[in-house]
Image 1 (cartoon, one colour):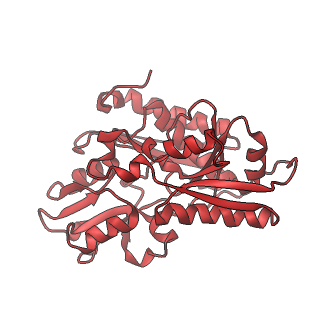
Image 2 (cartoon, helix red, strand yellow):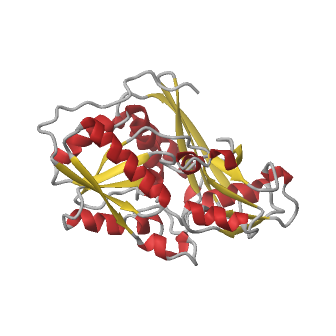
Length: 327
């Protein structure tokens, strides 16, 4: 698919240049890479600005012995960062967008969405070239119910085991032989210079990514519109529109770590195409929907996402959701 030719950034008149900005970030190597990337982008925009990073450990980083779906979901990765925004220790927080809850808490804004890296899932193994080569009973690690559902559907002879921890921790578990293969987001591996560890990229059909996968989101307080203005040159419009459609699907279906749900949008010239599914964890039941529309605004993108979510609901997706449709 070709990328959309529309402008790649959103410009807003900036009222004044910032003197100091503090970025809240998790302390994992990948999270710090992301925060440093944002810092460097801001320094290019505002050379006189003192941009600092406040590293933090979140609940999601501390609880590693249980699946995210059993301990509160991906929101565990952002709560402490939001507290730092609220009490003034930080001005903005950088997140992997797929970790950002679909409904922002009151008083917080998703102020900026940066250009997306590779959104695909990646197969990583030291001994095998693909999922299809794994022998019966081989252990595959993944932190995602979405990935688990697809793998169980395509390869029921494999054993799926939870895989928690930061990227380096997960790679270490593979290298110690605890898993024959692991599935990770390609974006993180590439950002840390580990792209050579990828044996094969998994295709969007059937391995459709999570909403927002590969994109960086920057969160701010709603009461600080000037910070949102300063961030506006970092916005990437094609990515913003794509993830707006994806997040609308997930929002309508109560997307969380408890739901095997995928939503990914791509561009074909000025047309946005989106593919989404909801599945049972065992992979035996799936509702799949696709849509296409001309998209020029966030409202257009959300309308497309809404249409796809309605299609899924009409197919019976609510029966696959542990808590039914969100109220």
